[in-house]
Length: 235
Image (cartoon, rainbow, N blue to C red; front, side, top):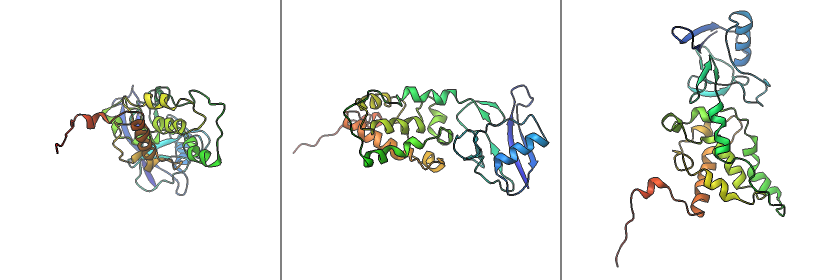
């Protein structure tokens, strides 16, 4: 079975090429990549960690869709590419520095601990799924907003911000809401691509919608809607 891998190296001319490899059927994509590196081309570069879908290190794009290489079974003719919206370092490895920088911008941690708060099982369940994020960057890669607005906070930072807004132990939820107004909740198109590719079943689109609702409760309005002006009726 043959697959193609989009490769990149800054010193190569041309720096970007697409190379085909024969691989064994029935293996995972990560196993195929490891086999290629061990037996055919030791320069092939990719990330991997736990090999069990827990660490998120091996996320790549296959045929334009984000997957975890350790969980995906290749098919004939697949095209494997690095994640989008991040600078490619080499082959399938991208520089994730800018994406990780969105977490402190979104204040995605507990800001002020309410020692008197009691967390019920229902409330714990409400934020449980957001805590399952493995930071694989699949949602960040799938987001179309980042193509035109690089400073956009992105799905995983926003979904993590909601996790703390909804946490009853957070004594200052407004600080999170304040932090996600610029290049944040109102710039999302709610296309749902982030939700579709999340390997953990997290719904960033839904969380961003909840952040918008909470933003309105704190007096924030969609700046895009404000440009339409206001209209009144006289009776």
